[in-house]
Length: 113
Length: 109
Image (cartoon, rainbow over all chains, first blue to last red; front, side, top):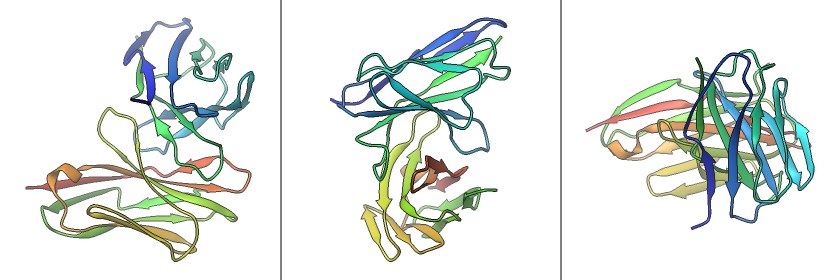
């Protein structure tokens, strides 16, 4: 079955540490996205990519970095510069950026310890 | 300035008690309005896309409608398995998809 796989499901980060969240899709979608979800707030866009080797910042890109070396993969690195990283992170993909609904992964819950 | 506002924040219904969830938006040049269902600890699941005022979409007990200022998600004779958070999102021309904070629906048997 086609879908999006996020790993790990739970991740713990120590102060000053970089961590990388994995996102893989086998839907042959061109566009991929990373969102952050906090309680009581709507999903906020971190980064998106419409094509391999190209990506754009979203509303809250500071302290995060991404790469898109393969169509299927869009990993997110949470750097030590992100001061409040505890959140639920969601990866999504779509056929194109406009007018198409997104397919989401099951999420990664990141906690700072 | 909020572009997408969902109400109510939470809604508790008895099984079989029909109701509606509201999503109001203030974007111009709407490209699409999207409804998603999200279960606790999971990613959102796509339900509907509405593209123009007057459009309606249905899926089982759910029906989504769209006007120039808002969308409604009508739930007819809900069952406990309909309990979830329902997210609304809008996409304007040359902009990213903007999500509301969601309505948390609980259906009691």
